[in-house]
Image 1 (cartoon, helix red, strand yellow):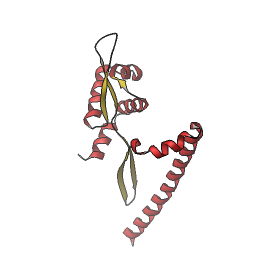
Image 2 (cartoon, rainbow, N blue to C red):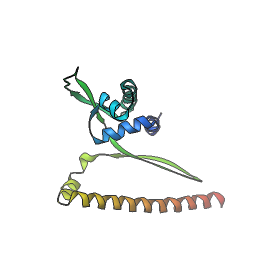
Image 3 (spheres, helix red, strand yellow):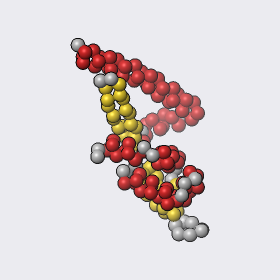
Image 4 (tube, rainbow, N blue to C red):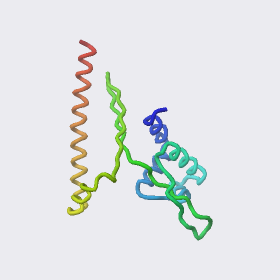
Length: 150
């Protein structure tokens, strides 16, 4: 199974996607996730095991507990974006890693702005890039269709 197939298999489950959404907000432990998602702790542990096996999450240490043994914390192990394009004559799946550690220069630039305004600008730019990308995909699909027909 290649990496993209493994990622798609891991995130096909709604509960696992909810776990990832929570871990994107910060480190959490299994009982905390079970309570928030209203799923048994045993089920959460099985989902965490799947996500960990595919290297999407990792253990992030232990947290002391007044009510029992220390709790294992989990966090995202990497960021990525998956793009799937399909249309007649076109089927492509690509994975792009997101490594925030390499963005120190962008961080300095953003800190000088109002965070809310910076986020709005970024969201608008992403939406515009997505619109442009879709136009290009449509053009590509038309060209491929013409080549297959002609």
